[in-house]
Amino acid sequence: MSERKRKIFTGAQKAKVALEAFKGMKTINEIAQEHGIRPNQVSQWKKELLENAGSLFKGKSPSVPHFLTH
Image 1 (cartoon, rainbow, N blue to C red):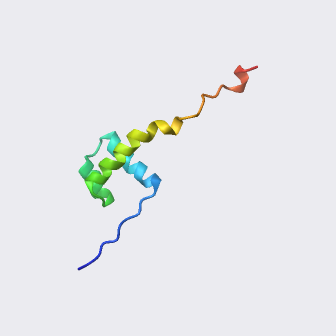
Image 2: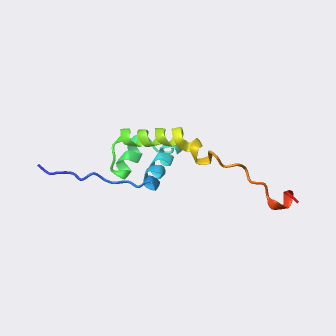
Image 3: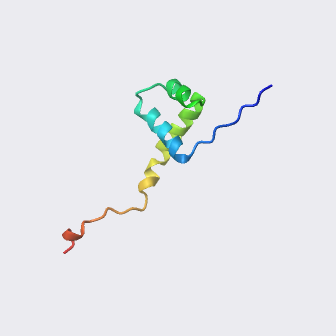
């Protein structure tokens, strides 16, 4: 029996796959096949992206250009 090694994806790779799924230009199955992963993993990464996207901007106040403060 042959053993399959698990692929290790970086955060950037997961984000790229999730964004592809979010865009909706390809089906989840097509994306999964292209990247050699299962469709449910693509769906999970997409869900995580959508749930956590707001935290990217958390705590950042809008910056005011310095020329407006003088």
